[in-house]
Length: 509
Ligand SMILES: [Zn+2]
Image 1 (cartoon, rainbow, N blue to C red):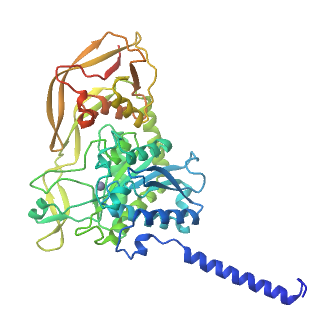
Image 2 (cartoon, rainbow, N blue to C red):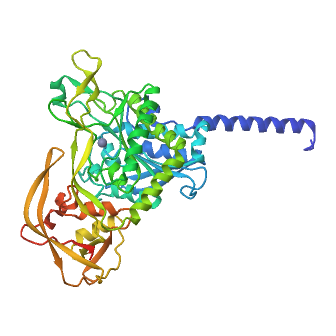
Image 3 (spheres, protein in one colour):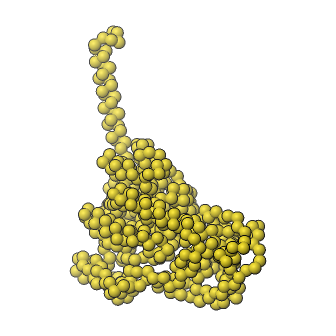
């Protein structure tokens, strides 16, 4: 039978059809399914399941690539899933968005929502997003904590209090990744747990499926804070409620009548503010924690988290030029900001006469209700401003500070005290304390002295404030800063009563 004979051709066509069918069926059967779904929403995704799933997605899609951005204390991989219709981070017209989840290992729904989202974004109907957006998703920042369902990492550190000092490999990985791409938009995904004893006694608890918060530190561009609160928040809260997830603005504190309610901390050691302080359009999203174990209602919780993240992408898609222009302009201003600008280094939460209508679940009736909060403090007010110096001189013998500057990728530059600049040093007269969001923090009394000596490069390195991390540098290094390095045990020994503070300020004469 020759190859050209009709029967051969028929067989050939049949074989090809069957092969095609087999391939199609096997492709469908290999279609990756999110582990949570595979586990019928009864078990949180393990690190191994997560690893297998993201690798399957990578193999399946041209849109998504998995990048290893670091490793945890126990050497588990930290993955970023990058989504781009071109080469990630290379198109200057696109906007870059970073979402990262599960810094706290016992907050499972952020990771689960991120994995559901990854799968969802590969549906062809979502492809339009990537005409404008390069998106990076880190589903799990704390795999070691997640494996044992614990908040902290394997060094027993709270990662979401570590973004200023960056002593942990997990937070360092997030910041290195951020520094590499300078994402214009970021969101840090968590859970909140409203089941505390004082709330039980009060008879109510917070009950929103998803809450969203913005940056509140006064040194984040006021325009970015304004657009975040007045434009993004209403958009995403409606986006969630339109999809049957109850939503509310992120407001820790309470119960009312016992403690005031505010819009989060102004500290810059968490995921949202540490990136926000670099004039990023930066948010926190918190889903409701499971009450009697982390799997309670996990499907609804994960889908709520996914919907909030999806809402962020939709907002950024619809407002791409506005957000990108805003961030670009405010970042240029930050880098160019001359010495002498005001930086707020001590602040307080204050009321503005507004009352808060807070949605709660009543333990008496078992129903949703609202409570009016009178002690509501939505504003942040500065208690102490200082003039931004040109930069700081740091003694090289203080190795903890040298390591800190390196971990923050702050490039020391050569600097000579010339006729235009002078250095100042603080003398510590007394070490007092000050209220900080209901706790006490260190508050030294200082006297400013002029320095006449030379500052050889061999003994000091200089960190300029004319950079994207300029305000962060001031907040970290000023001894009277409420959120400075010396408020951490690791750096507490820099402050000694009756001695000079070792970090010098350089100012214009
Ligand atoms: Zn958390």
